[in-house]
Length: 229
Image 1 (cartoon, one colour):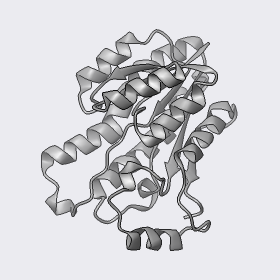
Image 2: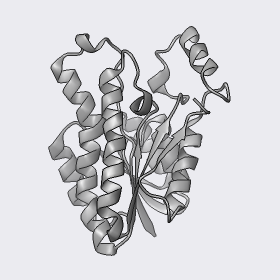
Image 3: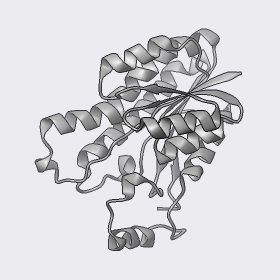
């Protein structure tokens, strides 16, 4: 059975990804603090959980060293922050970029030798529409997610000859804890800028990831799952 590694598996999108790929992969997923949710997800989908702080390089390297196989890597773990850029302290700035970009790069670096050796692999990076358009009061998050897009496009060119595909998903507003801080007015403003006039579900992202995992002639692409934002 093929192996899928999914970061941030205890969140809403992460859980949907685990559920989707547990159908035909052995799934290993990471989580940080929500052990109860991770244990429940692991039991329900016959997956394996691993506690890891994505902002700590040694944690990522240690996790990477436990992997003997990896056919699919989904870099999903992420955190957001809603403040004026001038109000974000350096430590918080570093944590956001470490989790949302550097951590994903480090884990990708750890699994690439496995994929290159087998001459096949698929990497899917979860970015955001704010990585494309930018968002006021989410400047650091937007920058990190834009970096994820650049990372995807550049790496796809570097590893294509090794049979490894690298793609990116840029979700819009998804029904998840990450958007729970938004007011009804802010949500309505967002919906008015969305062609389908509705919020997406974590399953929508998981279905897009399924497509990219199977699309053998697609690499270096950014797939918007945003309802036509």
